[in-house]
Image (cartoon, rainbow, N blue to C red):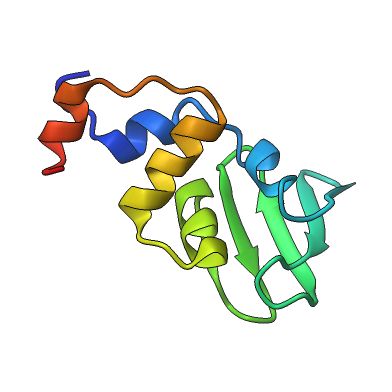
Length: 102
């Protein structure tokens, strides 16, 4: 945990599928989950549960759970990380917060 930062710590405790379900419905399609994009509202939003990443083939936006929340809520990634930690009851130590300059 010494090399871990707040972003990887929170991401490792989350499921991108659970986070995404707060914003859009997902449907299984082979190894992927698909939906209307919570950013552009068009079909083409794909979640890869195995890789814990998403991509929208319409608005060409991709990333992880933190990126998704950051873009939807229009907040910085650090704020999105704290929001996710709060929503999913992930305890973040002060040491981990300080390590990230906050």
